[in-house]
Image (cartoon, rainbow, N blue to C red; front, side, top):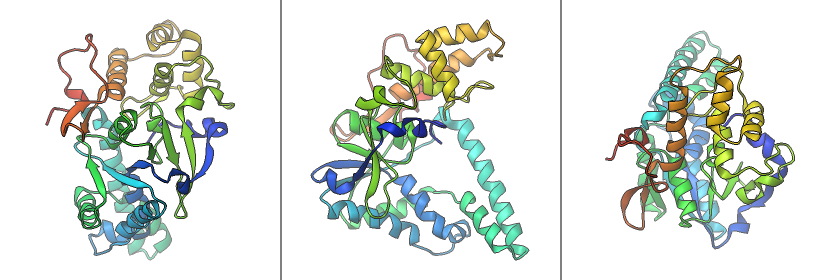
Length: 312
């Protein structure tokens, strides 16, 4: 889902780029975002488990485009379900099921346009679909990583540890994860826009002057993310104003408790867990071929860290 409203508020620091500018670089690719886009043209077939390879062809076209311009792609896949995202995943599954039922209903009534739209919303990128692409990647000698849990955290780790030079995604979550260089909106010709975290404080639409990466992260969580729904009436701009004024989420929550906002009893505890999930989620390090944390665990974390993803 990403952080609602974040990317439009950073428009002034998004620089047009063509992938030829990344020649000689390695990039981590948010593979599920490519599979989702590729699946739009064959969503009906995928929903009905009918044979199709258009979604695979879509991904491989982009892989070959990167390689043509001398860019090394490393395709990153989502792995196991992250406990912190359980509520969000259940919500998405319900939505897909409802849309599948609507699609079949529209189709039975001969309304193919409405059915097509619902099939697109109902399609699920299952592990078997991901595996189908993995087999092609193996044949074509394309590097890939299956994350222990979320691809976002895995891609951020590869970028922050300088194992890749940039990340290609459509998901604004990579910004609160602290990813230094992100390519958004890459099209079939290789055109896109580049985000660099070093330019954050120059944004004209969202004044982040004086904001640390920690403050950016806390603002994003406060505005609502996959790990924690926002409080009633809380959007990005209100979250920005509060972090700007109080500098930390603890002071913001304390302020909200004494104002008219209804703060649930467990909200602060949930906020801490969301924060730690962005900072310390379990990822795979290809250099040591083992599961590690996105960043080192600090001393004050509780011993029960299952919410970061159970150790496999």
